[in-house]
Image 1 (cartoon, one colour):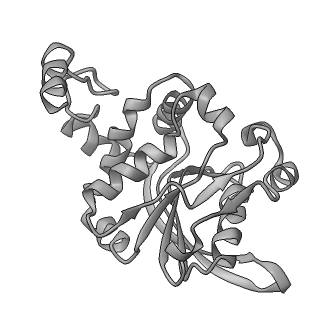
Image 2 (cartoon, rainbow, N blue to C red):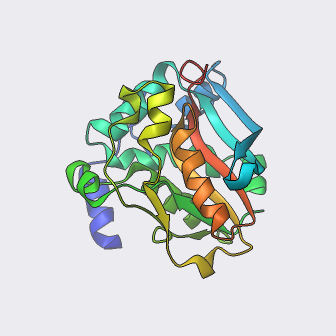
Length: 229
Protein backbone atom coordinates (compact mmCIF):
# COMPACT_ATOMS: atom_id res chain seq x y z
CA UNK A 1 0.00 0.00 0.00
CA UNK A 2 2.87 2.40 0.79
CA UNK A 3 4.41 1.66 -2.61
CA UNK A 4 1.07 2.36 -4.34
CA UNK A 5 0.63 5.58 -2.36
CA UNK A 6 4.13 6.69 -3.38
CA UNK A 7 3.37 5.98 -7.04
CA UNK A 8 0.08 7.90 -6.89
CA UNK A 9 1.83 10.76 -5.09
CA UNK A 10 4.41 10.92 -7.89
CA UNK A 11 1.79 10.83 -10.68
CA UNK A 12 -0.86 12.98 -8.97
CA UNK A 13 0.92 15.11 -6.34
CA UNK A 14 -1.55 16.74 -3.91
CA UNK A 15 -2.01 20.48 -4.26
CA UNK A 16 -2.47 23.14 -1.61
CA UNK A 17 -6.17 23.96 -1.35
CA UNK A 18 -5.39 27.66 -1.07
CA UNK A 19 -2.67 28.42 -3.64
CA UNK A 20 -2.53 25.33 -5.85
CA UNK A 21 1.15 24.54 -5.28
CA UNK A 22 2.24 20.96 -4.55
CA UNK A 23 1.80 20.27 -0.84
CA UNK A 24 1.95 16.96 1.01
CA UNK A 25 -1.14 17.44 3.17
CA UNK A 26 -3.09 19.75 0.85
CA UNK A 27 -1.79 22.90 2.50
CA UNK A 28 1.67 24.37 1.93
CA UNK A 29 3.76 25.86 4.72
CA UNK A 30 3.30 29.38 3.39
CA UNK A 31 -0.51 29.16 3.37
CA UNK A 32 -0.48 27.34 6.69
CA UNK A 33 1.37 30.21 8.33
CA UNK A 34 -0.67 32.82 6.48
CA UNK A 35 -3.93 31.31 7.70
CA UNK A 36 -2.65 31.38 11.28
CA UNK A 37 -2.35 35.16 10.97
CA UNK A 38 -5.93 35.62 9.78
CA UNK A 39 -8.68 36.80 12.15
CA UNK A 40 -10.54 33.51 11.76
CA UNK A 41 -7.62 31.66 13.38
CA UNK A 42 -8.52 31.82 17.05
CA UNK A 43 -7.60 28.68 19.06
CA UNK A 44 -9.57 28.70 22.31
CA UNK A 45 -10.46 26.43 25.21
CA UNK A 46 -13.83 27.34 26.67
CA UNK A 47 -15.85 25.91 29.56
CA UNK A 48 -19.57 25.16 29.36
CA UNK A 49 -22.13 23.72 31.72
CA UNK A 50 -24.54 21.16 30.33
CA UNK A 51 -27.59 19.73 32.04
CA UNK A 52 -27.75 15.99 32.53
CA UNK A 53 -30.43 13.89 34.20
CA UNK A 54 -31.80 14.83 37.65
CA UNK A 55 -30.90 18.51 37.07
CA UNK A 56 -27.21 17.73 37.45
CA UNK A 57 -24.90 20.16 35.65
CA UNK A 58 -21.56 19.07 34.22
CA UNK A 59 -18.67 21.35 33.28
CA UNK A 60 -17.39 20.56 29.79
CA UNK A 61 -14.37 21.96 27.94
CA UNK A 62 -14.42 22.91 24.26
CA UNK A 63 -11.29 23.37 22.15
CA UNK A 64 -11.67 24.86 18.67
CA UNK A 65 -9.19 26.29 16.15
CA UNK A 66 -11.12 28.68 13.89
CA UNK A 67 -14.13 30.91 13.73
CA UNK A 68 -16.55 29.39 11.22
CA UNK A 69 -16.12 32.13 8.65
CA UNK A 70 -14.48 32.94 5.31
CA UNK A 71 -12.06 30.50 3.74
CA UNK A 72 -12.27 27.93 6.52
CA UNK A 73 -16.05 27.82 6.31
CA UNK A 74 -15.80 27.22 2.55
CA UNK A 75 -13.21 24.46 3.00
CA UNK A 76 -15.27 22.69 5.68
CA UNK A 77 -18.34 22.76 3.43
CA UNK A 78 -16.27 21.37 0.54
CA UNK A 79 -14.88 18.67 2.80
CA UNK A 80 -18.34 17.58 3.94
CA UNK A 81 -20.53 18.03 0.89
CA UNK A 82 -18.34 18.14 -2.23
CA UNK A 83 -16.69 14.72 -2.02
CA UNK A 84 -13.29 15.86 -0.76
CA UNK A 85 -12.50 13.32 2.00
CA UNK A 86 -8.76 13.83 1.49
CA UNK A 87 -9.00 17.25 3.19
CA UNK A 88 -8.90 15.50 6.56
CA UNK A 89 -5.13 15.69 6.17
CA UNK A 90 -5.21 19.47 5.93
CA UNK A 91 -7.55 20.02 8.88
CA UNK A 92 -5.58 17.58 11.06
CA UNK A 93 -2.45 19.67 10.55
CA UNK A 94 -3.85 22.51 12.67
CA UNK A 95 -4.19 20.19 15.66
CA UNK A 96 -1.02 18.11 15.40
CA UNK A 97 1.38 20.93 14.44
CA UNK A 98 0.46 23.07 17.45
CA UNK A 99 2.64 22.10 20.42
CA UNK A 100 0.33 23.69 22.99
CA UNK A 101 -2.75 21.96 21.60
CA UNK A 102 -0.96 18.60 21.42
CA UNK A 103 0.09 19.00 25.06
CA UNK A 104 -3.54 19.61 26.01
CA UNK A 105 -4.83 16.64 24.00
CA UNK A 106 -2.33 14.29 25.66
CA UNK A 107 -4.29 14.71 28.92
CA UNK A 108 -7.05 12.60 27.39
CA UNK A 109 -7.28 8.83 26.95
CA UNK A 110 -9.69 8.31 24.06
CA UNK A 111 -10.88 10.28 21.02
CA UNK A 112 -14.38 9.51 19.71
CA UNK A 113 -15.90 11.02 16.54
CA UNK A 114 -19.54 12.09 16.43
CA UNK A 115 -21.13 9.17 14.54
CA UNK A 116 -23.39 8.93 11.51
CA UNK A 117 -26.12 6.42 10.77
CA UNK A 118 -25.31 3.71 8.23
CA UNK A 119 -27.72 5.32 5.79
CA UNK A 120 -26.02 8.72 5.98
CA UNK A 121 -22.57 7.15 5.82
CA UNK A 122 -23.58 5.21 2.71
CA UNK A 123 -24.88 8.40 1.07
CA UNK A 124 -21.79 10.51 1.79
CA UNK A 125 -19.24 7.72 1.56
CA UNK A 126 -17.26 8.83 4.61
CA UNK A 127 -17.66 10.33 8.07
CA UNK A 128 -15.65 13.57 8.05
CA UNK A 129 -15.26 13.54 11.84
CA UNK A 130 -13.96 9.96 11.85
CA UNK A 131 -11.18 10.73 9.37
CA UNK A 132 -9.80 13.66 11.35
CA UNK A 133 -10.15 11.99 14.76
CA UNK A 134 -8.26 8.95 13.49
CA UNK A 135 -5.48 11.10 12.03
CA UNK A 136 -5.08 13.03 15.30
CA UNK A 137 -4.78 9.72 17.15
CA UNK A 138 -2.08 8.54 14.73
CA UNK A 139 0.00 11.60 15.58
CA UNK A 140 -0.64 11.53 19.34
CA UNK A 141 0.31 7.96 20.22
CA UNK A 142 -1.15 8.03 23.74
CA UNK A 143 -4.60 8.92 22.40
CA UNK A 144 -6.74 5.89 21.53
CA UNK A 145 -9.15 6.22 18.62
CA UNK A 146 -12.52 4.51 19.14
CA UNK A 147 -15.37 4.65 16.62
CA UNK A 148 -17.51 1.77 17.94
CA UNK A 149 -18.43 3.21 21.33
CA UNK A 150 -20.84 5.98 20.40
CA UNK A 151 -23.36 5.07 17.70
CA UNK A 152 -26.25 6.90 16.07
CA UNK A 153 -29.39 4.80 16.10
CA UNK A 154 -31.85 7.10 14.31
CA UNK A 155 -31.73 9.16 11.13
CA UNK A 156 -32.27 12.88 11.70
CA UNK A 157 -32.86 16.01 9.68
CA UNK A 158 -29.80 18.02 8.69
CA UNK A 159 -28.94 20.21 11.70
CA UNK A 160 -27.85 23.16 9.56
CA UNK A 161 -31.41 23.47 8.20
CA UNK A 162 -32.96 23.90 11.67
CA UNK A 163 -33.25 26.65 14.27
CA UNK A 164 -31.91 26.30 17.82
CA UNK A 165 -35.06 24.76 19.33
CA UNK A 166 -35.49 22.37 16.42
CA UNK A 167 -31.85 21.26 16.68
CA UNK A 168 -32.33 20.26 20.32
CA UNK A 169 -35.42 18.20 19.46
CA UNK A 170 -33.80 16.71 16.38
CA UNK A 171 -30.99 14.97 18.30
CA UNK A 172 -32.93 13.72 21.34
CA UNK A 173 -32.43 10.01 21.98
CA UNK A 174 -30.60 9.37 18.71
CA UNK A 175 -27.24 8.33 20.21
CA UNK A 176 -26.33 5.24 22.17
CA UNK A 177 -23.20 4.02 23.96
CA UNK A 178 -21.94 0.47 23.56
CA UNK A 179 -18.83 -1.18 25.04
CA UNK A 180 -19.28 0.97 28.16
CA UNK A 181 -16.37 -0.69 29.96
CA UNK A 182 -13.94 1.02 27.57
CA UNK A 183 -14.87 4.52 28.72
CA UNK A 184 -15.49 4.09 32.45
CA UNK A 185 -13.38 6.63 34.36
CA UNK A 186 -11.65 7.66 31.12
CA UNK A 187 -11.00 11.18 29.86
CA UNK A 188 -12.69 11.55 26.48
CA UNK A 189 -12.24 13.85 23.48
CA UNK A 190 -15.43 14.09 21.43
CA UNK A 191 -14.59 15.22 17.90
CA UNK A 192 -16.98 17.05 15.58
CA UNK A 193 -16.26 19.37 12.65
CA UNK A 194 -18.28 22.44 13.70
CA UNK A 195 -19.77 23.68 16.97
CA UNK A 196 -22.92 25.71 16.39
CA UNK A 197 -25.62 25.53 19.06
CA UNK A 198 -23.88 22.53 20.63
CA UNK A 199 -27.04 20.39 20.50
CA UNK A 200 -25.35 17.37 18.89
CA UNK A 201 -22.29 17.42 21.15
CA UNK A 202 -24.35 17.89 24.30
CA UNK A 203 -26.57 14.94 23.47
CA UNK A 204 -23.48 12.78 22.85
CA UNK A 205 -21.87 13.95 26.09
CA UNK A 206 -25.01 13.15 28.06
CA UNK A 207 -24.80 9.53 26.90
CA UNK A 208 -21.05 9.27 27.51
CA UNK A 209 -21.28 10.71 31.03
CA UNK A 210 -24.19 8.48 31.98
CA UNK A 211 -22.12 5.51 30.79
CA UNK A 212 -19.22 6.31 33.13
CA UNK A 213 -16.88 8.68 31.25
CA UNK A 214 -14.83 10.82 33.65
CA UNK A 215 -14.00 14.09 31.86
CA UNK A 216 -15.08 15.12 28.36
CA UNK A 217 -13.73 17.79 26.04
CA UNK A 218 -15.40 18.75 22.76
CA UNK A 219 -12.87 19.14 19.96
CA UNK A 220 -13.86 20.94 16.74
CA UNK A 221 -12.23 22.59 13.76
CA UNK A 222 -14.41 25.66 14.08
CA UNK A 223 -17.09 27.42 16.10
CA UNK A 224 -20.04 29.17 14.51
CA UNK A 225 -20.60 32.39 16.49
CA UNK A 226 -23.62 33.37 14.40
CA UNK A 227 -25.71 30.25 15.03
CA UNK A 228 -24.80 30.06 18.72
CA UNK A 229 -26.44 33.44 19.50
